[in-house]
Length: 398
Image (cartoon, rainbow, N blue to C red; front, side, top):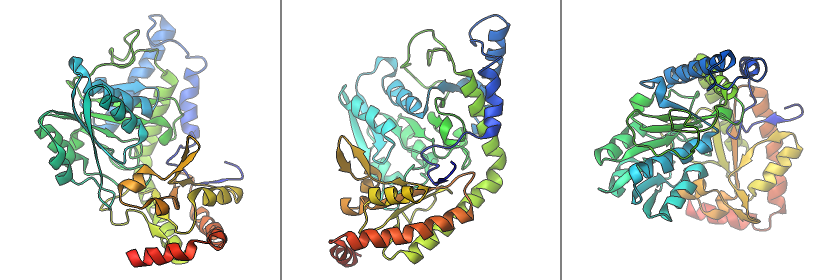
């Protein structure tokens, strides 16, 4: 990260040197296939199962066998959505997903809608939370699966997963949650949360890209989506990434050890950031500011009169890496579906910035970022002929 102040830890994290140290032997001298019977294979198999046990303990799974190693968080989400919805040969039914899910959940749900399933996208409220009574209102007798993320990757709001899962189970539906953003940052106890399936991503917890985990509660009907040699107890075929599994387990171990001090440190940095941005940039807002609970490391702002991409590029030139709520897709600019789902109009959703903090973030980084952002906003607003109209409309709507 030399020359760049990295403030996009929700997108990916650098691999912790301690994690590299743990995984390197399984890329070099202990490279065996964990399904082979000779010594190298047995060594690899032992390391794989040890990693499985450690992940299971961290999330309080009832058994290590409930941990399925995957290629990434997206594969884990896909496996859960398709695997649970189509279990036992099922080809129809009702599926509920929240409208601000990651595309790794939304796209499989859309695909199911073309295969005979009926899909309901449940909107969160303006506080960035899926309210239990709203889920209750859309549940049906034929609902087979509900998927609501544990913590949102753009606005950082936490969801009442235990209560939502109880509502799903009361109607006979399975419950899945994408926890890629929450693992290691808040307590994740799958038994207390009551989930049937939960998805995790290695590169969000300072492990490398290319490894994910699916927690699949014992007894949950599941149709495997990756067929072949029957690895991972026939739930995900393919030779396992032993080095990745070892890295995932070590990274999670470090997160758990450091969370009692790291989570409050990040929350303090986040609050410092929010206070400065709102104080120094006129009309700036924190998205989903009314959320009852939020992740310690994410702050998402809307800055009227500025395009997110323009701010991002100017900040990049100034040496800061952040994200915007807009995404370029197929040559057309689209506002964030997350921000639209909580009621932001497109013109405001276009002017958003997400700042996400991490292990190597410091107060000086936050202060320098705000110092750089203020003149960038002033410059972009001065160039925007519609800025005054935008603010007038915003003031009328307040």
